[in-house]
Amino acid sequence: MIAKYRNNLPQLDDRIFLLDGGLETTLVFHEGVELPLFAAFDLLSTREGEQRLENYFEPYVDIARKSRRGLILETATWRASKAWGEQLGYSESELAEINRRAVALAERIRERHETEDTPMVISGCIGPKGDGYNPSEAPSIEEARAYHQAQIDTFSDTAADLVAALTLNTVEEAIGIVQAAQAAGMPSVISFTTETDGRLPNGISLGEAIRTVDDETGSAPAYFMINCAHPDHFTKVLEPGEDWTRRIRGLRANASRRSHQELDESTTLDAGDPAELGELYAALRERFGHLTLLGGCCGTDARHIKAIDAHCRH
Image 1 (spheres, rainbow, N blue to C red):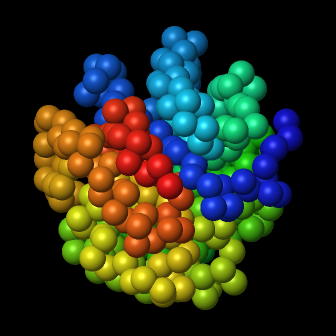
Image 2 (cartoon, one colour):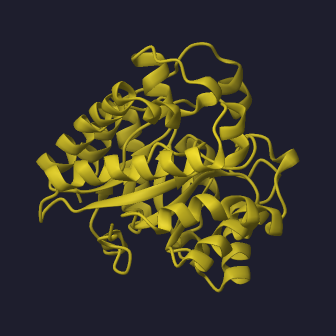
């Protein structure tokens, strides 16, 4: 399989690309799907589960096509790596096959629905080795590179156009992932999560994290993103005109203003207000026009992406 956009990512232009919402929270709270360890990739082990994932993307495809937006198809592989796979009984070869199936699913969607007005980019999704909210056991640079290399190498032999690491909480793991992607010849995207004070869970400022990753990798990431935090948590730390701020191209915000700890302990879904979230995205885009990749994270679904799309018309 040949990656369509790997050498020329269309989302690096100024046009808006949409992403989906919170895959796992949608499946668990809206569709009643049991996801052990919050691992959506497990659905790819059955044809029924695969179809459920395919159905999940339909409303996002519809929104993007009606609005003539680009769409980034993020694979359901956030936890399809060794440490998480082993807990669910997957061997390394089985995990590799799951990652390939995830890309193949995205490829089928692209083949059916992509148009000139709605280019669709396939993103191989990577998650942290440990808990995205707790950096206490995060790997070193060397450990991260060795750990993530297998999943990235698998993506490099598929139609995936890039790899995107979501909900990262340490600079070291981010650097290791970027190095692994460089070794595999894959474009990489780093998405940090922040606490309510706009800092990474280990206390490092967002600006310091982005600058350090760029300094240590020769600015290798295609761009950076922020995910799994409400706009109120990180807007205050973004600095107009700063080089590190301009490196942030994408947002996958939470619908909820709750902290990570509160979300972890909650047994109900806080879906927030889709219209309000759309307004917050529009306000951010007024200040930071380089924020062109717009999606959601925990608690968001197609309603939120539709509202974000509607409010961000320019």
